[in-house]
Amino acid sequence: MRYCLIYRVNFFIALLLFFKFNSYAQQNGIVRFENDTIAIKKQNDSIYFYTSLGELRKIVNLNSKKSTPYGVPKEVQDIIYNGEIPECIEISEETFPSYLYTNRYVDAGIVLCSVNYFYNDLGLQTGYKEICPNDIADGDDHHFGSENLYKYNKYGLLIEKENSIFRYNNKGQLIEKCYRNAKSKKISCSRKYKYQDDKLIASTNTTKDGKNDLDYTYNNKGLLSEIIKNKRSKIVLEYNKHNKIIKVSDVKTWRNKTFKNTRLIYHYNPQNRIIKISTYTHYPDFPFEDWDFVYDTNGNLIQKKLNGKLIGSYQYDDKGTLIYLDSNRRWGEDKGHITY
Image (cartoon, rainbow, N blue to C red; front, side):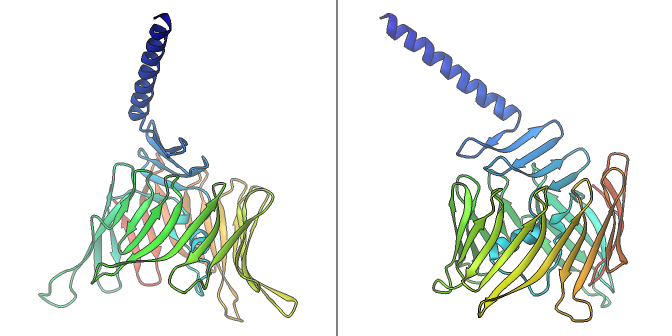
C-alpha cells in the first residue's frame, strides 16, 4: 500500500513537471525537433532558428525588423544539395541580412512598380504582390506574385516555394527535393538525401537511373570538405581557422593529373563578415567578378560594389532598421524609402 502511494505521488509530480515544462515552452515559444533539440526559440524581441545539431541558422529581430542568416552562404548551400556549380554564379541575397519591410518601389526600366511583401508570425516571408503600370495607354496594370507563395513546416523550414517542394525528416534534415507541374499538378522528385550520425553522406538522383549520385566526405573538424561525383570529378570546399568557407573548387582528374578550378572565393573582416566574394566567369580577360561589401561601425551593410562599381547603398535608423536603399540591378533599379 505504501509503495503504491509513493508511486502515485511520484507519478503525479512527474505529470505536474511535464505540464509545467510544456507550459513554459509554449510561453517562451520553444519548438523542438523529435530528438528534443531546440528548433525555434522566442526570446524577448528575437526568434532563434537552429539545426538539429544545435547550430544557429537564423535570427529574426522583430524590433529592428532584421533577419540574419548563419552558417554556410546560401549559394554554397545550393551547390551542396544540387552537386553542381552553376556556369554563372549569382550571389544570393539570402547570404546577407534581410529586412522585413512591407512595401518598396522598383524601377523596371520603363515603369515604376510597387511591391508588397507578406510574412508569418515568425518573420518568414510568405509571398509578395507586385503591381506594374501598363506602359500602353489605358492598358490594365500587370500583377505578379501572391501572398502565399512560400510555406513552412512547424520547424520554420521552407517546404514549398512556388512549384518547388522540400521534404524533411523529424530532425529537420532535407531528405527530398521535388517539383510540382504547374499544369497537371503532378509531383515528381529529383533528389533524395541520406544521413548518418546527423551528417549528410549521400544524394541520389531519382530521374537519371543512378547517374549524378553524390557522396559527401568531411575533414577532421567535421566540416564538409568534398562532394564526390565520380572517380574523376569532385567539388572541394576549403575553410579558414574560424571554420568559415573560403573556397569552392571544381577538381577533375585525368590520366593521373589533377586540375583544380576555383569557382568561388570568400574574404572576411575580423568580425567574420563577408567583405568580398570572387566568382569565376570563364572569360580569359577577366576570369573573376569581384563583389565587395562595406559595413558601418554597427555591422550594417552600407555599400555593395561589383568590380569596383557601386551598385548598392543602404541607410539605417538608430535601431539598425533599413530605411532607404539605392540598388542598381542588372535588369532595373530599387531606389527610395521603404515602409514596414
